[in-house]
Image 1 (spheres, rainbow, N blue to C red):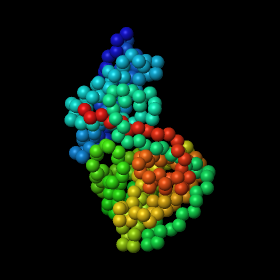
Image 2 (cartoon, rainbow, N blue to C red):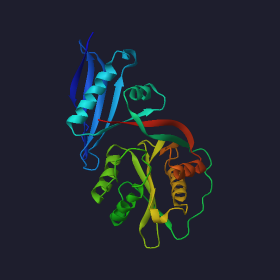
Image 3 (spheres, helix red, strand yellow):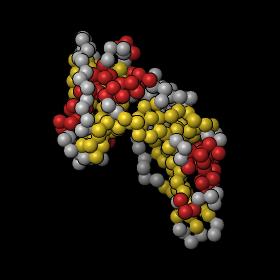
Image 4 (cartoon, helix red, strand yellow):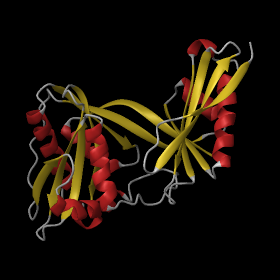
Length: 286
């Protein structure tokens, strides 16, 4: 039977992005694969397109994946995307498929996990700073300082992927927290404040709505002028203790770190995070 690709209208539309999609189906309508391409409307990121591609295992090696990829590439070009990105487990079928089609490794992410039943080492306080925390949307009196502190992630290792700084404003800061709450999950933030009262670093954790399973670290950053003092270690240790207390049924915490981010990898190792698996973020210039 021949394969036809059916363009789909994807309801997953966000304030700064939308998705276009294709369904691969047999002549009788049986679905055998799909592809989703996310288009970013922010000017600094509109040249990047992230996609997901899936073919049913029983239907592989029929050229379906290649047909879907051709549609993704064409869709990217039609929408002025210059670089396609996809995350695939290292040495997986998808990893080899993208390599075969000319995708290079842009960066490699190392996923690690902390078992919350393990003992976390004691971490000293950092002189000249104090820690604060909140749950959900940041309080109004802290929102600008917290937004400014996000620039601490601008120089995070990105491999060979050119994306530019991730621009945040107060509206986006609030919206990101609101989206997490709307889907029923819990956001918790621990931040470091200097003697002037400004937030100079932070770490975020998101926990499933039922408080079970594994939580996920989101951003962790320290402004350049305040690095080298142990703030990231102190904040993350405090976050672990807070999460344990608030969610006693939670099993663990997950985090991912670019393989070249040696400082954060050392911090995570010291806190007891153990390697799980690795993901290649592959890229193709179109």
